[in-house]
Length: 485
Image 1: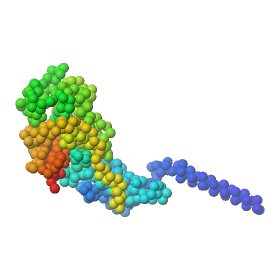
Image 2 (image 1 turned 180 degrees about the vertical axis):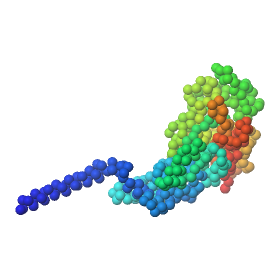
Image 3 (image 1 turned 90 degrees about the vertical axis):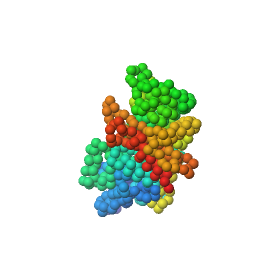
Image 4 (image 1 turned 30 degrees about the horizontal axis):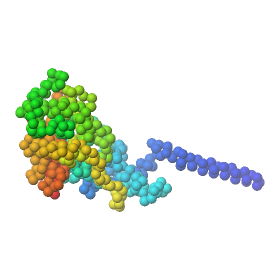
């Protein structure tokens, strides 16, 4: 009898060992596979079992969480959803996350290890911290001024603080309400299908993910390259530029939209936006120097993040002389995001230095404790300081007595550059209206805001569409919102 009991005990011990080995295999070896299995909803249920952290603008939440009482308990809500959609993106139970909701997802959802009271605490206790908050750099008055300035027109606005790189406004129209996508039911699915089928692409963040031909606003880059390279030494000296200008090696004649451009000085050509002068100036400066300056401003940089990725703005480095002439006036293959052109204006305003833009000021725990803080990014030189001073002079002239007069602000120093960019097959599309500029208040030691505005579907006769008439007033309202106390 004792022998049978011993055998039964041994058999039970073997079963226990086998059970422990299998448990260890499941918990350690196969844990990741089980966790990532689509049929496993535990992480999803845990993710939505608590409110999500908030995204803040000037200390005020523009997001929230609604208790639905369902299995996936909390859904994302948005205050002024269309206004801040290019900043927040969406957080959907069905379609995932985008923009700040995506890049800061770990902190907002409470899974970031930095939120744990002790290292590996959550791994040991299988607990989840309350979601943290993300404080943005957005200036609410500037954001609203940009949104209301565009109204129902298609386009984008980006504004930055030249001395730091803080993004003050980021607007894209048409926009959408991210709250429509928050749940996982029929409403979210219908909204997703409708938004993706819309030819106006309301979920496209035009301020950072869409590139446009920058047109004459690119003349800021061309003028800076020519000054840095010593091709231009006197802003008031005649340039010996014909009107029209025959592109090198071709019979194609380039003309101007304004009069008085023949043999105009760089100052006159910049003030009244003479294509012929700047096309010839780009050719004289050469591909190498034009490329070097464009790259210093941020063109051809595929790694720019803020923290979500920014589409690469491009200046073609393989052009011939005729193509270079067109590229130098912001046409041919030259493409830029509104944020990139705001960086160009910021570099002029910042004395030739450009800082990479950033959108997150700091992140905090639910109790307010700081997790991380941001600050001015590393500086690189886009142009010599002396060149920046002369570019500031040129841009002030555009606003004082040139095509950018509608950007002027009483009591402030404002510099700018207008642009009208042709596009489409045979330039058949409605021209894009551009304005880039910067502003300095009466009591400011340095410019406080740099802005870029592009309007895709400006109303009116195509001959009457201009950056000065369409985009400059929007830029003015944004700059004034930042300067006003």
